[in-house]
Amino acid sequence: MPKEARAWQRMLSGRRLDLLDPTPVDIEIEDIAHGLAFVARWNGQTKGDFAYSVAEHSLLVEALFARIVPEAPVKWRLAALLHDAPEYVIGDMISPVKAAVGPNYGLLDERLAAAVHIRFGLPAIVPVRVKKQIKKADRISAWLEATQIAGFTTAEADRFFGKPKPELIEGLGITLRPPVEVRAAYTARHNDLLAQLGNPDK
Image 1 (tube, rainbow, N blue to C red):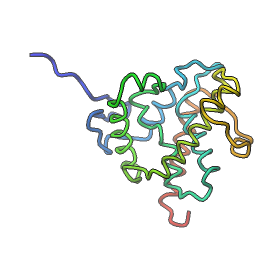
Image 2: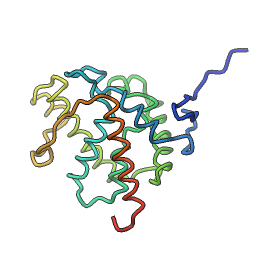
Image 3: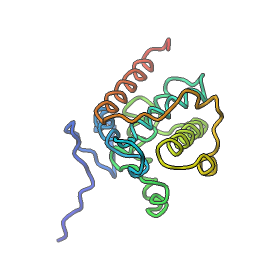
C-alpha cells in the first residue's frame, strides 16, 4: 500500500499546519513573520547583499495602501500587510510559474489567506473593492522594486506594472535588511495594527 503523502508543515512555533485544510488555530504571526522574512521576491534576482523579502515588500505595500486610501479602516491596513501571508508556507512564485501551475495554486492561496484573516479578526474574504486597492499598492511596490533593485528600466516597469503617480511614491524607497531585522519590523507593525483594531477610537 503506497505511503500517504504529507500535506502539512511543522512550524517553528510547534504548530502543524495542514496546507489542504488550514485552520486559524494553527497560525501564529511569529511563524508568518519568520517565513516571509526568508522568502525572496523576484526569485532572489535582486541587487544588494540581502534578498528583498516578502516581509519587507508587505511593509511597503501597507504603507502604499495607506497613501492610496488614507481614510481606510485599520482592518484593511492589516489586510494589506497580510496580503502575501500565505507565502510563508507556499513561497513566492513569480507570475509565469503561477500560470504554469494552474488554478490549484490559487485555491491553495485562497484557503490559507482565509485562515490567516480569521485568525487575526478579519473577514475570511476581503471585499473586492479593497482587494483592488491592495493590488494597486502591490503593483506600485513592484514598480519600485523593479526599477531600484531588479534591473528593470523605467520604461519596462511602466509597461509591466503601470506608471505610479509621483505623490504616491514620494520619499519611499527599497530597503534591504537582514532577515532578523525585517522579521522584527513585520511583527511589530502587525502587533501595532492589531492593537489599533482592538481600540474602537482608532
